[in-house]
Length: 118
Image 1 (cartoon, helix red, strand yellow):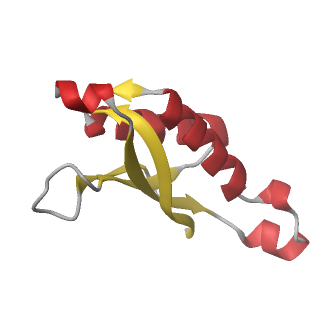
Image 2 (cartoon, rainbow, N blue to C red):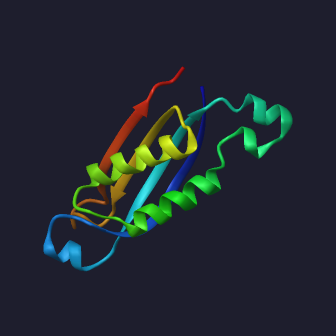
């Protein structure tokens, strides 16, 4: 299985359980690894035969900007489901981080994997 990836996607959203988090948008960082067989696309040089990382990124940004989840776990699950359902991705690893969640840490977050690698 090949992997198409996007690293450092920055999106502002409402995320968190505390009142001060609900009052102001925060930046979350998203890294994606998307399992997909790219051989047909490489042979034909045809974007329709691979994962369009621009389309995936734009759709994900739109979804995250419009969301208002309390937990990063919920946001990560919903993002993973969106990507798998709308873009037919059989396997993914998604890392979602909140860079300013703790003043004594660079960032906190979660990494999830969904689907299976054939």
